[in-house]
Length: 381
Ligand SMILES: [Fe+2]
Image (cartoon, rainbow, N blue to C red; front, side, top):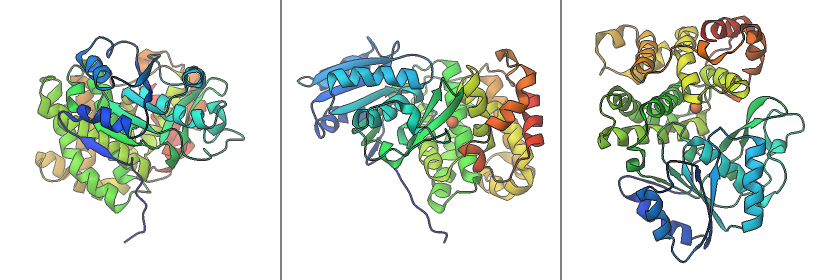
């Protein structure tokens, strides 16, 4: 068997009611608690009241992250708040942006300064030197899997790119995945976040760095994620489907942290660094084109992943079937099939093709030439 490493958060708790474990998990670490969340959804919700009641007696500072994806500047604002409050533990309650802000903050509390110096691929970048402040993840979306990953995706305003701060030192102290928290997610967010997880499962499974445990985990999670996407557009209040989506998202995070991703994420990273396109939407829009470009080398693996449960068409041509499913899901969640509506000028296709060469692209099962990348981009933007 090929040697492998498996890096995960110290503890993962999954299932209905696990939010109730938050107080004891926090108190294992300390009583000065900085809670990071989005500005809108949590405030005034029953979850918010439950969290505050459970942490009675602790000193709490609330920090509301902006709705945009994290940037060097927005992370610095969280850093300034933490420097004033001096937390012992961080709690992230939210989606991928809140998770990634908290991950970056956990390092910046211990190693103050700009996040820019830790962004991989930027000139002069250095590794995170040691463990960050312990943080606890409470995801409220089911998509990015950021609760289980060791990288924080951050936009550098000065370089105009999205890059990762990546280190095993950023893994969560504990993850509490309570699918009930995702019940009220709007249709569009359910679609974009679910399709992000869907893409991550597929790309990690066929990645050049895929390992035996990642493949086993993805084989178990993929059918559940597919069920969730297939059903949630019609039945968004179905807790069983929400549970499947949360599980698929969690596994997609473990998978990408240990096996990397592929070209769909490479393109999504390039586009997302320059334009305000939802990450999951970008991934899903690129996925069918990337699957087509990879067909020869992934046919066997995708056939195994899709299995026998999706009918004759899936068995005859599993790669084409998977690509058509991604397109169908985009449509069912009211999402566009391309990125033409985002005002991306066609003239920058060559620049985007260059910028797509980040760490995700290196996981793609075959090398895509600059011309192939530009061709795919031209069909999408
Ligand atoms: Fe993603």
